Image 1 (cartoon, rainbow, N blue to C red):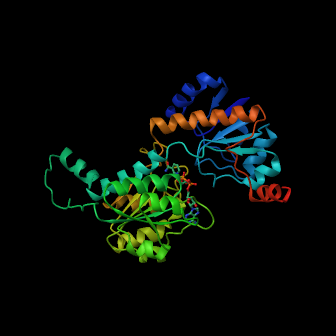
Image 2 (image 1 turned 30 degrees about the vertical axis):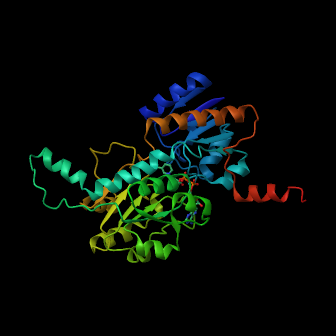
Image 3 (image 1 turned 45 degrees about the horizontal axis):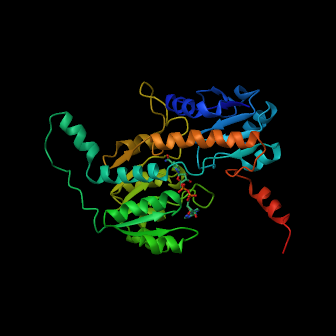
Length: 345
Ligand code: NAD
């Protein structure tokens, strides 16, 4: 089966070339992102491999299906960028990489906290200019502070463990609280308003869903401590970026560490250093000294890239052999239909 891989960079080619020594698949690497205007490139490929800023909407999927695509293999855990209902109607299976290294993402979230708190980005720029002054570089001990974790799945749990290691009190909020984890990790589930009001650091690890879209809005930001740090390594649209700009401008939040941004598609992963930045909200965010932005790089460890390549090619192999797709993601309607079809006891 031929694989058309979109939004590829040198590091993708390297990790897939290594994994493909075992799987020996024919892979065509495309640099453009998958979207309506590029979907035709995949013609003749039964498998299309996409990443987080590719857009598999109904029209794109239609073009892929017409070109012979039967499997959409996501190189990501998140699948908010795929119209699953349309995929099901067109007979395209969707698979993902549910967990490639929760450590990579959780450690990056903590890196953002440490860098912002101890102002490493500013200190580093200063000493390069032979400015060895310490004015304005005061941070705080993480030990004894309260961290609020929203979403205690794979990544949130690892983040909780790291913050516990620093001696922090960890509060958590999840739609489905995990009592066993809370007990073993020594953390406490609280209502969202309590988490916002009590945390010195709020870190987001919930997926992007209709419920979590802009969950950190004006009201949520107003209910956080003025001294709080907000960290987002999940999906940009969990935060209302305009409300975040307003809160930072008015000193309602101490700092923000963002690895994701709601309008990142078409910006992140590219070298735009010779172009004008057209996104005014991102430009404003980049102008704050207490905001640290990375370009969706939390997953970027050797271990994670290796796992992504291995699991993606294993997903393709299982599909090709008609095996059970353990990493399939299906539309609600498909899941409901299959549950309804189950024999009742
Ligand atoms: P996961 O599925 O293991 O955990 C997600 C948790 O969020 C679950 O416990 C779930 O119950 C909870 N949740 C769902 N809806 C919620 C809501 N409305 N409110 C509160 N909690 C809710 O996922 P994970 O592997 O821990 O990944 C979390 C997210 O991290 C992914 O969805 C993805 O968007 C993001 N991610 C980012 C990067 C990166 O490079 N920045 C890499 C991988 C994953």
